[in-house]
Structures are given as C-alpha cells and as structure tokens.
Length: 328
Ligand SMILES: Nc1ncnc2c1ncn2[C@@H]1O[C@H](COP(=O)(O)OP(=O)(O)OP(=O)(O)O)[C@@H](O)[C@H]1O
Ligand SMILES: [Mg+2]
Image: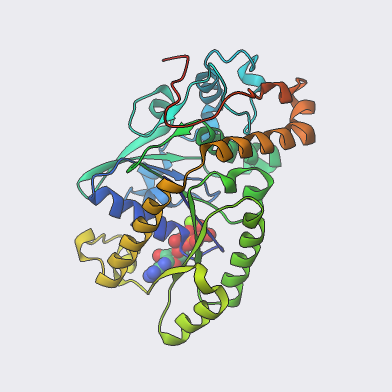
C-alpha cells in the first residue's frame, strides 16, 4: 500500500509518518519510507543523527539514473532527457518492487535499522539556495512521482511518504498516487482548513482521505475535530512524551510509546490494509496518463522539444501481475 501523510506545516506529518514507519518495522513488514517534503526531517525522526541524515543520497540528484533505469527499452520513450516526472510506464519499461534490489534503490535508498526491522529510506533532497528556480524544486519532488508511477507494491508491503500539503502536490498528479492519504490536523481552524482544501481537490479524483487528529488534548479538541471533519476523522493522537524525548535526542525504546498512541498506529495500519482490496490499477494508470497529458501540454512538450503525448502506451495497465519486459 502507498500511504501519504499530508497536512499543515508543523501539524505532525513527519512525527506521525515516522511513528507509523516504526510501527510497521516492528511487524517485520517491508517498508520504503520516502521524505518528499522540502524540509527534510524524516531521517532524523527515524533516529539518524544530523551527519547521517545529511549524507543521505538525494533522489533529485539521481534523476538521470532513475529515468534511464525506468525507461528500460520502452520504445515510446526516446531518451531519458524526454522523460518528465509524469511520463507513465508502458511496454518495455522497468518497474520497481518494494522488496527487490535494483539500481534505483542502490543509488537513492539507504537501509535504516528500526525496531528489529530494516526499512529503506529515500529522500528527495534538501531545498538549497541553488533551487531558486521552481523547475529545480519540481524536478526533485518529480523523482518521487516518477518512482511511484513505476512502483508495484503488493499486500503487506508499504510505501510511506512524508509530504507537504502545499499546492505542489496538486500541480502534479502526486496527490492521486496513494491508496490512502492521512491528513494530519491539529484541532485548530487552520488545521481544518487545510483538510477542506485537500478534500476539495481529492474529491474529483476519488482520493481516499482520512484525518488523523494530532496534539489532541481533551474532549473539547475532540469535539471540535468531530464537528469539523465528521466521518473523515479516523483517529486522534495526543501529546506524546515519547515524541518529546526523541526530540531531545534521547530516543526511548519504541515499546514504551504511550498505549493510546500505539493503538492509534494500529488503527492507521488497519485503515491502510483495508485499502488493498479496493485497489483499482486501471484507474491508477488512467490518472497518471491524465496528469502526463496535462503536463506535456502545459510545459513538457515545449521544454523537451518532443511530443510527450506519444509516450502513453494505450494498452498498458500497471498492476501486480505486470512483468516488466526489460529485466535488469
Ligand atoms: N503527538 C505529538 N506529541 C508531542 N510532540 C509532537 C507531536 N506531534 C508533533 N509534535 C512536535 O511538533 C513539532 C512539529 O512536528 P512535525 O515536525 O512532525 O510536523 P510537520 O508537519 O512534519 O512539520 P513541517 O511542516 O515543518 O514538515 C515537532 O517538534 C514534533 O516533535
Ligand atoms: Mg515535516
């Protein structure tokens, strides 16, 4: 399952993604964790020190390799240079699997030992002063979208993405790439307004959205969220001393996480697992094509000087049964 955490700045996206990833790691499930936020904090939230986090390879800096690999020998994609973030896979493309080893993981993923398991961590790369042009920034998060569009995950396999809720994910098709999106909301008007905005975009694309209340202190907070969010409210998380201790650089054992918060993580996993049966690869593929055509027409064709609409393989549907024609 592909799971995103979105929400207002500071709402707790990184904290809750990292707790969810730790929880999954305790179950031994294979996990690919992706930090797709401009401000990269997932690595440290998963226990890396600053130096280790800074040394993580940036997906944005390996775009040529990623494109070359995914392109495989797909005849509709003439070169890696004409591959944009939305270019969909087709016959001949290479696909990514959660458990396999492949050159993309070799270049862009690092193993993180967590709670007796190992997860793969990938990061888009930090937003630096060199990224003043919007295009650079887009190409960075674009690497994640490209990978998600070529990724085939099975039951009990998880891809967890720490995202921004900003308009960037709407400009591309990124927000439609998930089986379930957890919108992290504090019980505040701003927290809830980000939810409304997200829900509006999501509605047109059938995006499954659930709200995770965070920093919920008591009945009043809970009433507020229930009133504003209604049935979309999945679960709430309270203030966590465990998280505070982690923030202080004194990581406690995960086993000592507050019981209520542990229960909340179980609820998140159950909600994620329940989406498996509802998957619609045909729609997933159709949506990536939709956003590709949109991007091709609005900037891609002009930027690359190629007719990117021709990259769409009309007969191709991504799915667990698809065997990539080109094997590594
Ligand atoms: N349930 C919680 N209990 C205690 N502290 C929390 C909790 N949730 C989040 N925090 C703290 O709130 C701050 C913001 O959380 P976090 O960094 O996870 O938010 P974010 O949404 O990822 O922010 P950004 O938009 O900057 O990426 C952090 O200091 C984090 O430790
Ligand atoms: Mg964050």
